[in-house]
Image (cartoon, rainbow, N blue to C red):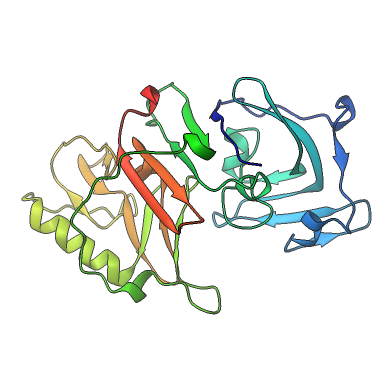
Length: 269
């Protein structure tokens, strides 16, 4: 099914879903394709799952299907989802659930067989919704930029599954493999003619002693009056966090293996 509708996901708090009140809720058996795709499952009572995320949050419950309402009243039947009975982590305290947008068979985009999708995260201090576009509505005008001379192997995905770069809307700051982070840090230092500060109090190592507007790249430490880069070095995996994605239209094209992004006003899309 090719989705032709653009969807806006609204903040719905931590509302509790009651399966017994739904006529379209169906618990999946362990023999189902989606259940077999789970990394960890149990068959004592239907397809029970335990799923963990990179920020150490986790969810445990029953895998099921349900009819979801998206966009302006578009009904999408038999969408697989995890009906969690034990959810741990800050992400589950801020919303009713998480939506998967990866390449795996359990993600929403894989289940809907969508060739491309895009989203645009509004800034944290804004109250407007962040739109999510699926299918043909996911598009933007591509603009070029000067790239740093970082070796291709720096962010390469290894045969054992390590390495690579995750674009994660659930992780706040960006973590880059040390080689790439070092080059990016050098580029920033060459363009920002400001005295360096000590960001150890906030766990960041690229800080400047001047009150500039943080926006996507800097975090203000009120106690010390410093600005610190919202990124850190890492080893083994790199993550592009949501601070750097705010105010950008992010377009994913899994079929074409392309990621495009453009700065924009998300509330005007």
